[in-house]
Structures are given as structure tokens and as C-alpha cells.
Length: 374
Image (cartoon, rainbow, N blue to C red; front, side, top):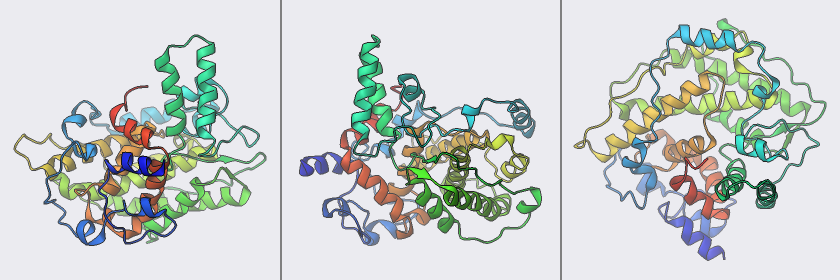
């Protein structure tokens, strides 16, 4: 029932009254963070929370999951750029588009769907996943693989990672960018641009006008963010640096995801290297000591994981969908997250997650317990 589903989900979020709940069921709206108690709290964090209630704040669970990525000099990036030439067309497809009909594609998350492919919506996702499971059983796959197929299908439907496909016959216009576009910011509001990407990514298919809209937003976001990022100082403390790092993570997620939708490998473009050099991500913060405050631990681990994800985006690829979902959820829901991400301007993304988690409470719990299951 809806009540049981809500109770299952409420264990992962504080049940407080929302300030902005337009379009949400009443039960889900009550799960949005309350402005007075949450958004205005001190950035350092003053409330100690149980890791059992807030698994995203459990630093012990992050120790094994923290990506160990060393410094990536520009020469390393250049070498990847040169090796990307002549890459197969599948590189240009999103890692979490719709299910294309084969178990292998579902498990790997890399398909080449077209508008004629079956495009399940959220309601159809369980059925599609079940069909994939039947195929696994028919080929004598182990039960663990069957479960992974079902879960993978639902994960790829999460609004934090789901991407649309282009309608047949759509030819995206070229992305017109060069190094001179990154010298001075166009001062476009970043959050408004990110809202435009969100709007496009919520669709199943994109027509010619949508593709042109996405190309324009890639250009605008790149020109708005590159110069700002280059002027950003590297902060000595993660509690101060994680705000900018989180913003850069969202910028890369939007641009790389959009380019995958359009079928444009980022590393194949002439401007990509100049763009990514504006973003400093080739460093890590020291692991916190046992005596570090909870807020300090959370921000240190979060900053390092965001930096690791940005390094993956810089290579023109997307991190694992579970990692993207987890990082966005921490940024948008953790009481220790930067103040800028607690404002109601980010409520559209919070509502996306809450609605999906309300519909799929079991998956929401699995994302924290079994993120390395497949």
C-alpha cells in the first residue's frame, strides 16, 4: 500500500514539512526538508545523526567505496584524447538509456536504442525488467545475475540518471565551441541552465527542435562555467571546497550526458581538452581522523568522491549510475551538504528523487545496501 511504501522510504529521509510541495502527493511532500530547520542550518553541521537513519552520512560505509584515483596530469588526458579517435559508435550512446532488448545490453548499461525501440516508462519498467529476468533464466544464468538485471533496469529509470533518445531522422546541429569561449564567462545562471537539461532528460524522445535546444544549452553551460571554474581557488578544507566541487560535478554530468544523448563523444571534439583544463579535479583531500567532527568526515569523503566522478567525466564517460544517484542525493538531502544546495531552488531535483523513491522503496534501500552488486 501507499502507506507501507511511505514508511519504508521514510527511514532514509527526515519526515518534516516541505516549503515547496507543488505537484507532490501529500505523503511525499512531507518528506521534503523543512526550510527553517534544515536550509538555514550552519554549513559545518550541528546535529549528530545516526548512520542507521542516514546511511549516506555513514563514513565507514564509504571507506571501501571511495575511488582511489591518483593525479591525472594533462599529458595523461592528452593521451586518452589521442586514443579516442576511431572509437566505436557505442561510445556515443548514454550508459543509462532505455532497455534495448538484450540481457547483455541491460547488464552493461550500454545500448544503441532508436525511436523504434521499446521505450518503457516508469510504470512499464518492472515489466521490462521481468522480461529481461526471464531471458536470463532461459540461458541458465545464476540467480544473482537475474536480480542484477531487474535492479539495473529500475536504476536506469531513476530521474538522476535516465536519458532520452533521439527520434529517428534527427540530426543534431554541431556544437560550436573553441578555447576562446572559455576566456570570459557569459554570466548565464548555472541553475537555470541545469533546469533546461533536466527538462530535456525527463523526456523519452527528442525531436529536431529538442536536439537543437540541447546543443545550445551545452554551449551556454560550457561558456558560463569554464572561466568561473578556472578562477576558483582550491580550498584547503573540504567543508569549504565541496560547494564548488559539487557545482562542477553537476555541470559535467549535464554536459557529458547531453553529448551522449546527441551521439557526440566528448573526446572527439576539438574544444574538449581546453574545456576540461579549466576544472581542477586532480587532487584529493586527506582522509579525516577518528577525532574529526561528523560534518568534517562527510564533507571530506563527499569531496573526494565528487572529484573522482569529475575525473571520469573528464574522460568523456559517465560514472556508474548508482554513484551518480548517490552523490546527487547526498548533495541535495544531507544536512551537512553546502548551504547553496539546501535552498528551495533545488527542490525540483529533490521532488524527482522523492517521487521515484516513493514508487520504488525497495530499490531506494538497495542503492545503499548493494551498490557493488553488479
